[in-house]
Image (cartoon, rainbow, N blue to C red):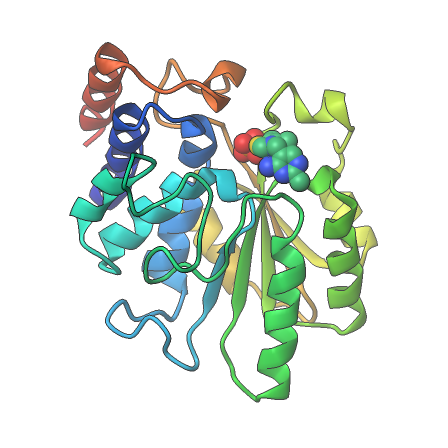
Length: 265
Ligand SMILES: Cc1ncc(C[n+]2csc(CCOP(=O)(O)OP(=O)(O)O)c2C)c(N)n1
């Protein structure tokens, strides 16, 4: 049996991309289990006080997956679900890539890949200086890890032994135009992060127990969770299919996807 909250988040993602005729539905479905685990099991956040001083902070560095974060924040109660209808439409509120001014709970504007971890490491340093015990969580795409700037942040966090930052690599093995490891090979992803001095845990990114255990596991320095995921997870005709990076579901596809998700409850 599926988790109802997760199914609701996935349905919102499908509705938003259908209604706005916008893309990145596969990107978003890839990370729903990770976002659910963070927002509903791990992070210290309070939707009624989004700027709480000692809160944990989440950065979706692969900002083109914005619909997944919008849907999760709405489900958690950061804002009214009706605002989801204002995604990527004329006179809308929620833009295609994340804007930290657009709605409560969005910690960083992202969409230009390769910057989220650097900012997250900066936040983690600031928390150490301020003796603030808030933690920082950053989700990166595997294609995004092609960006050199990611590795500058990785090296700095390891040098400073920042145990208050966790990177989650959404390792779905696809990017916008092909298979990640055929574009720039990162097959031994875990070994790479280990070699740079991070504590690494490798999990099935759709297994809630494995995800939760990984977040709770001990770490002396920065932690990287390599989450093996499936782009388009939960909708059989979208799963592991490159074309759903840019396509949006039409009416028929929307209904078929919702029916499939409802069937898992
Ligand atoms: C700096 C930068 N370069 C290129 C792009 C265009 N772009 C958007 S999505 C994408 C692929 C991202 O792949 P991945 O990080 O694996 O995320 P996925 O959608 O597969 O989950 C690219 C290259 C961008 N947004 N920013």
